Length: 126
Image (cartoon, rainbow, N blue to C red; front, side, top):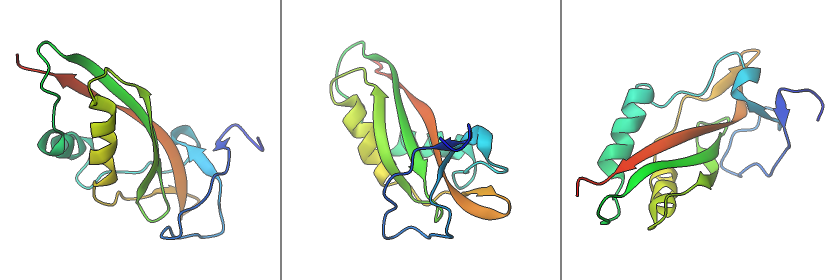
């Protein structure tokens, strides 16, 4: 790697804006991190409103995933890192693919691609 703030380069989706910087940064390596419209609380509200929890008694845990926020705010390259089973990871990916555009990360005043991870807590009421 060129420096500790970059992650390996991957294919940039055709839809994504490209300002010439094709690197994928981590959240520690940018001036401004990507932000879901309204902030992280709104992100989790969006997940809660759109996530179809598996109908499994006593299911509890976290689905952890990584994703890339593109220069245009789109979310791509969603990868489930930890899945609690019963389709919970696949459902998280489905919801994330349908989330609105994020405010992109910035480095030196320009939008950049950023890899980051988030958990989704799952708990059935049964």
